[in-house]
Image (tube, rainbow, N blue to C red):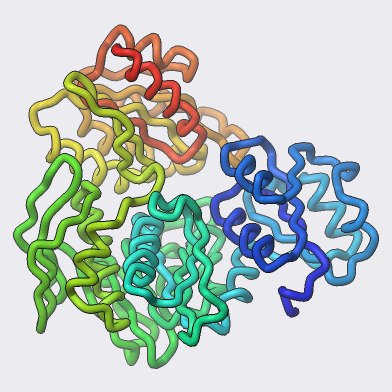
Length: 465
């Protein structure tokens, strides 16, 4: 299939962060793009402003006539988040249209490009965007398909220069959900972490680990694996031991960070490899976990021949990803940070870093659990990690693609939380509650629609509360 010769493409779930990047790629190369999503969002509005046609009704009548005119040279791209009873998906399948998952299409787009694929239960969006930025800043001809909106480029897609005499390098976020990353063809595989997740897909933690081993086994024979050292230890032995495997991390013997100094707006550290050292790097993004992400990105940039001074300048100019340790508001009385964390280990790393930055301030965490299955499977871990805050406010579970599970609610986390103050609140009642309690350091955490509270909270704080 020559993707550039398609008549048109229809996306089922076009508003997803990964789906929208591919939609933007097709739109850029001139293939007409239509799509469906359950609800409008800032991202779907952006796609519409770029010329894509989107509907929010799961109905056959919404399909464009020119797409229905034939099944030839038409492609339907869908995400597993689309429910099994989807009217549109079932109809398009019955009519004989070619349907491919997002991950399959991403594999087709990138199969002939030198690929850097970034996998991991946590950290892959920040790391992949950091790799892409360091390479682009250094003048490399890169493309990137990312799982978040970069602050530097205000997009989840970076396009390579097709007129360049440099062969393109593509940076892709390798998603373990639904084993999507097994459709990729990495020359360099980066592994940021390996923890159990998506047990609705993998059944148990051992199968998650096997999925990561299978992904790393796809690394090209002359390629390289750059892995967080504890994650590599969990997966040992790897299935392709002949491929060079480079461990990194705070505490790693091979690639590590020394002389770490934590600041409110960023961290300073030295990059140390066996045979080289880059002193006094500054990452304008807080979080010990982000230093580890930077170690992987720097190692990749050095592999592509980027010199030390350009690495330092590139890291200094990196602005992060929307909703990853994003400082939304700060004045003399209040600090407000928003983060996408939705797994116990992510929350633990995030709150530990917030505590390191604000050791003498009261931390209030507002958490919206994401998925009934994840809440059920990791309830104890969620309660334990959230206990790092001084006060915890729980919102209702965001269901995403799932139906409710009897007995699985946010309330089941409350008893295990050891924070001195804890409560359940509605989204509608959150700001009135905050107005009463006046938190010093407020953090919102979650991968659902909690992001829609960011602007109202920012507005409330900006009005002098």
